[in-house]
Length: 283
Image 1 (cartoon, rainbow, N blue to C red):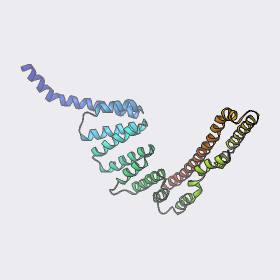
Image 2: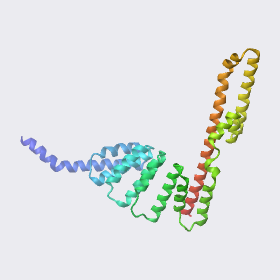
Image 3: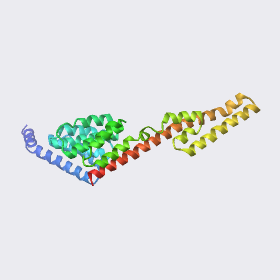
Image 4: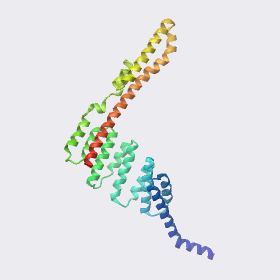
């Protein structure tokens, strides 16, 4: 009985200090792994420390896990721990940064609507740089949502009013209807149904268009030859499946090429906008 009481008293007196020491050692070791860019192992040790500690320590650990997850491209895991870190965060100045990081994760996941929701949560007073950053992030999110009018407005507000020429350059990029609407994917597919190969040429792939034209019309000529020599059904069974495959396949390829070209133009435009904004921030 006396032995049991002694063990209980020893645990109460010394257990907490040993416990805290182990927590700090684990966290420091995880921090060193993170600094060494060993994010996977760092996250494992952060997770060990997650069950202990006070509110501030739990915030720091969750924030570190979120960053480790992000750097491992585990964006869903990063979002979860950024969310926990946000509610545990005792520093108002850091809460904005956590929301920006969550919005970035949603953007990289192509979940632009969730990114916008996170960004609209930043309602407290913002510094000039934070305001620019917020507008830039909203510009990217609305670009992903294909709401180009709002995207343009946010991008323009992400740079100082003194950069008049740069703002006009962004305006000019958004004025190009050809950039955002052409080539029309459905038109490219329809053209290839009417004249095989024409949709690929319209989408900027002339070589593929010529190949499609030669292939489909060669198969058509072969089927006519077989039908004249044997019968319509012989031509249908011998050549029909191949003709159908390349005829419809060519139309689908024309649509895909048009989408690829449209996306390529949008990517180039977004790169130009990013370069303009970057130069305004770092002249």
